[in-house]
Amino acid sequence: MDMSLYENCRLCPRNCGVNRTKDMSGYCGQPAAITAARAALHPWEEPVISGTGGSGTIFFSGCNLKCIFCQNRSIALGQTGRQISTERLAEICLELQTKGAHNINLVTAGHFIPHIIKALEAARLQGLSIPIVYNTGSYEYADTLRMLEGLVDIYLPDLKYYSSALSSSFSNAPDYFSVATVAISEMFRQVGAPRLNEDTGLLEKGLIVRHLLLPGQTKDSKKILRYLHETYGDQIYISIMNQYTPLKQVADHPILSCQVTSAEYERVLDFADRIGIRLGFFQEGGTVSESFIPAFDGEGL
Image (cartoon, rainbow, N blue to C red; front, side):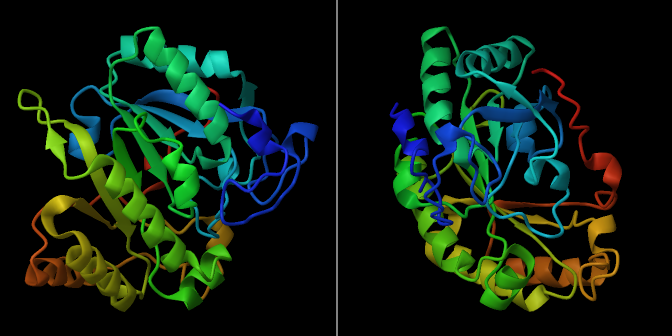
């Protein structure tokens, strides 16, 4: 893999152009060296991902969105994590497989893609055989995602906003919807319709698009669901999430300081049912809690 991609970094739509090999960092906040915050079995993904044994989830430090409400804010800002080598990342994947992980789940890894490719190729040669999940906020270049073709089995992208006003205010990305939908289209081109293991019921290949409801934004959520259903029909899973948790950084925000009400969530679920969404997931009560946020304590690194 060409590590020179870090020298004038344009891996993502922030298009910073900085030389990350010289310990410079752009919007993502990360130099070229991999930094991660946790690698462990994770039981709280969608059932076809987590199964009974858990998803082998690796949380990378840094992010090119830095949503102001992010539940992983400490790692998104690069305040938590430790540097690891490409060789160590390959070892971590194999260790998670040995622990019984159903898959390797790479969370917010886009700014390290050259290293990710090299690590996955090495791990495959050493016996890694479980699916690879690419878990992303979707503010990605399709050209960058093409580098992952043949390595990623399952894409797990967010589609956060339809409104450019919301994406600009909450993630400093007014072009989010147009960028993310092109990225998701590329993901779908690579993996196609979902394929489940007949014995375990776990997803082996496919696309799950997540949408997290935000307080007071049901109209935006409905536009996203309509877009996804009209574009992909039953060829993707849609995960409609109510787990938004207002953390201290938005305690005084006029919109984001509130929780999503059960009435809001029910309205969106009813809409999804009305327009014919059948292949998807919803969350039941009890998901709004800081206790569901994992400890970014360096476990497994």
